[in-house]
Length: 162
Image 1: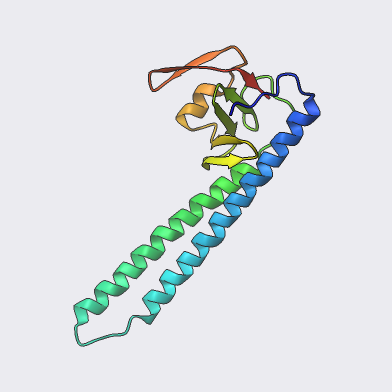
Image 2 (image 1 turned 90 degrees about the horizontal axis):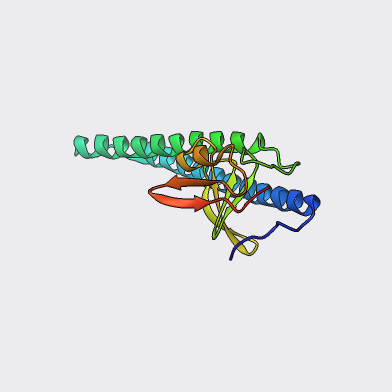
């Protein structure tokens, strides 16, 4: 379903963006809680591995648990960076051109330039939340309704920016 805000007042556009930002914040906080729990579980697993007569098995199990913990710790750090990007996102104005905090509608594709969260269902639309520094985000930044960009050899026409 395509999103059409062309004839709606600015207050509706701003309220939509604020609700969208709040949904993004909820998603990122949920991810952070999950990842922090995984870091803790991996650490507990590493600590609980008992030394057995097979010394190599013990060392391998501990090493695997530490690798898992490190992987989740990196994911947690990346999620915190995404949260920081979201917290800096200003949704209290209507954008005339694509920039951080803007919603960009390109036919069935709806982008929210904020942070790299990916695609999710929001209200009655599927929204792709992406960083303005991502390849597609960089193409959109500075563009207005009526402009077009080419991404992956596909021509994309920008219908709305707000």
